[in-house]
Image (cartoon, rainbow, N blue to C red; front, side):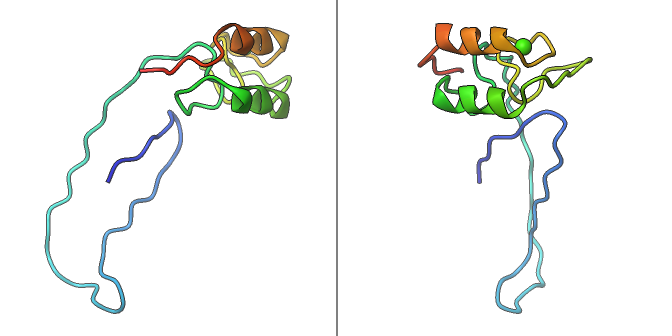
Length: 96
Ligand SMILES: [Ca+2]
């Protein structure tokens, strides 16, 4: 299983049987590859595009004092017009 995750979000991973077979033993391991901030990627899907404009508009005026958040494409802690221009300037970039 592989999933993209975001900072400061809580995820629930359920491990168990299906259809009443919910007993047994096994091994579960978690690994993580941390990626640096991707300028222009305000919705954290690792590609800069139309969705980043939408998430900036949805979160317009938000402030994230100690970190970045949804819509903050330029990573300065607030969502404003600079995030729109940053997304346009980095349009199509695939983040690593
Ligand atoms: Ca910003």
